[in-house]
Image (cartoon, rainbow, N blue to C red):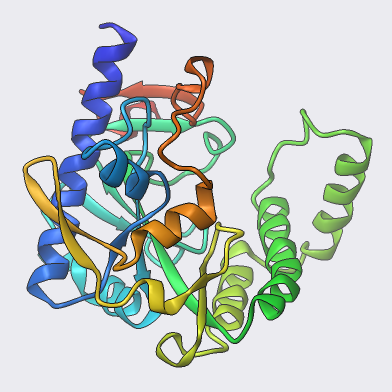
Length: 274
């Protein structure tokens, strides 16, 4: 199988996960928006970016909480709703929908005993009173992220001396806690300000702080053979994140962003777990 054919199959698997997600949200009147590179692909290409290998959506915190509380019961049997509450070794403050019949084991996560199927990323959007406050909170959020890495035995093989010393110190500080407890504390911290009462919003892994008014209820746009919601002012979101987003990157940069140990579209990840 050529790399191009494999990428196309990965993308198609992700599109099917997105279709499941969108169907659930539309039936239950939950707000969501295509985000990051997926939003860029929808606006600029009308599909996923041709060289991308993942898909991202965002949900306001109230809708996100409603989704993770009830969605699994209505999802197809092979689709797993993954977060730190449903999959104890999952190390991120977000949720993924995983196709459990596939394998996509990423470098740096291969040592974790969790679902490693191809996925759709679902990011909660949280409120914040100002951009200045967002900058202050980022420092604590970074600490949470590094602490979780330390708890989960992240490799320091490619770190410089300072990074290795910092990780060693974090491992001492987190020796008597768990990544789940740190994730719970981080989630409480992120929920300090109600989404619908805040002028600005941000997501877990996005350094940008956006105006809540840009999102609204979202608007439907064609995406493959179905419709998906994007922020009402998608142009403002894209310009804030990418600048001149109509400008294509150099050809040498048009490559999948994720590094994987194993990618198998025909076998479940459980066949590769040790």
